[in-house]
Length: 84
Image 1 (tube, rainbow, N blue to C red):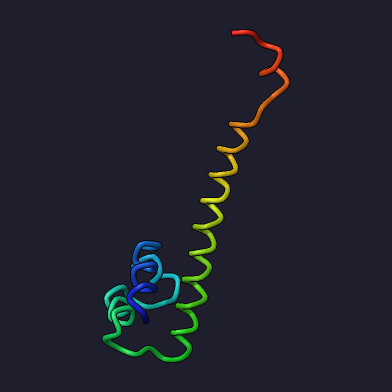
Image 2: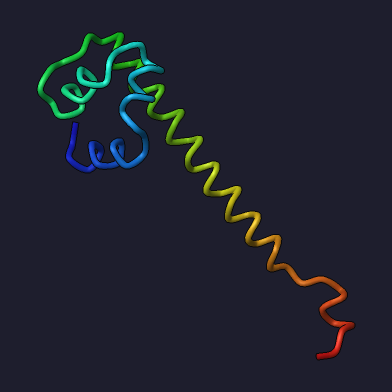
């Protein structure tokens, strides 16, 4: 795993949550992420799928939060009818 991807994964999720979702423990997952041990192909696939799902959920939450801000900032007809 590259340093950049390792940093992204660590910033994205707490290891214990990811470990629980993929069916392993956090210390072992940490060793995998830090290239200290090599997981089975099955575990590597579960980690990748779950990490991508968590990343997608995080990005979607960011988009929805931004959408809420955009909606709050939209003009309404009342903006043009009111005088200061």
